[in-house]
Image 1 (cartoon, one colour):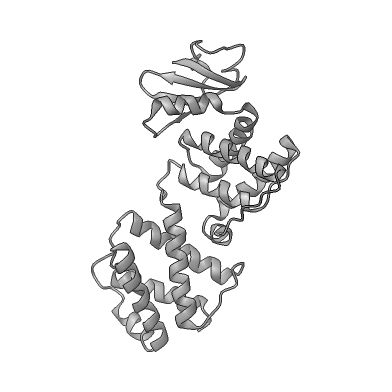
Image 2 (cartoon, rainbow, N blue to C red):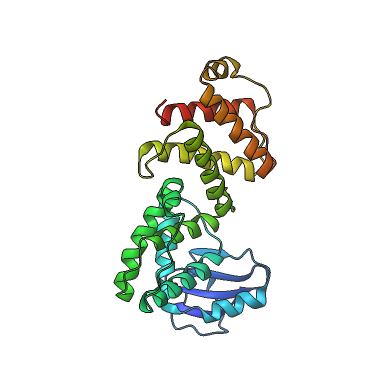
Length: 276
């Protein structure tokens, strides 16, 4: 594999015959290296693969990546590797580096773009969001620019989107479905969750996993094992109506039928967290 860009002494972008464009990190892997040099594979500690197929565009994006923003992103990704115990696709370096550069540019130009799903991100992706908050401090340390809290949410979404672990790559859809179900619960049950409350967090997490099952097309157990519990829950007419509306919405919008057990589990979570 040959080097196509040196970011610093410990990380380079390279072109591999077998893997295409990659980013590799390791102590001294970029030391006194220049474009075209062979990578010392003995010094490689981590390799980040790209899932994109447009190699020409990837190479151009890598070449245009500013070293300062790559350095920041590398720290963020390294921290996430350890705390989330996962690996990431190489696109995360391009995405976060570009986002940070653009966010700093907006700050300097006094342009504010609010993150309208920030509260949902906080509830759904707590660990990733905490890393995003840490990233804001590190960005300020390196650039002397303090980004808005909303940027921590965006960084969290990148960590979710480009994770190589078995997580959904449909983050926007997960957030949308969660908000749609919460809207039905609020309207039908007559409750208004505080978005920083434990009740909101618990039910949001349940809905997140439900959404991941839907977008992975993981069918629920077709055998009804919770009929007795569901019969008891149906004594609450408002709760029964709420579940019926959620089932109908998910079937219509996402072509997924909630199994009897999934309906029961959802009803229990609503009952326990909606104060009924």
